[in-house]
Amino acid sequence: MKDIKEIINVDSLIDYIGFANTPTYLYKRFRLDDSVADLSKLYSVEQLLAAFMSRINKEEESIEDLAILYACLFALIFKPVDEVYDIMKKMQTAPLRWADKISALYLSSITLDIDDNTDHNYDRLNFYGEKRNSTEIV
Image (tube, rainbow, N blue to C red; front, side, top):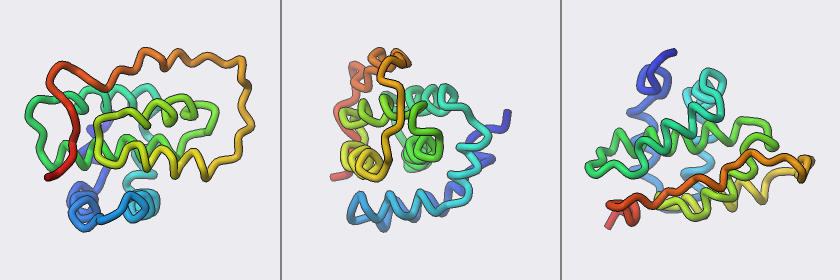
């Protein structure tokens, strides 16, 4: 399996983050980025979620880590709705700048056709480790 850094265009994603003044701008740019779509094709939902979770509570975070976090989040958007719906609902509480807005944009853009009896057990997601409060850039 290729490393995420080998798949995504880190420099472009960092530029999107740096220029973003709204979550809508970020949503549009990441959704249109081919490297994020490629990441979605090469990584499963569980792999994307594992990569996201391994970085969300890092004590020291670089701008590259932030680009990877957003790449994983947006790569989930390319997955089938029934596989990521619960995750995206849970993302509304993630300590990542604009995660709540990105999640809301996604959830408002989909057509639901999922089996309500499906339990993917994503209640176990806990974004708040001991050290992380937010990735808000001040």
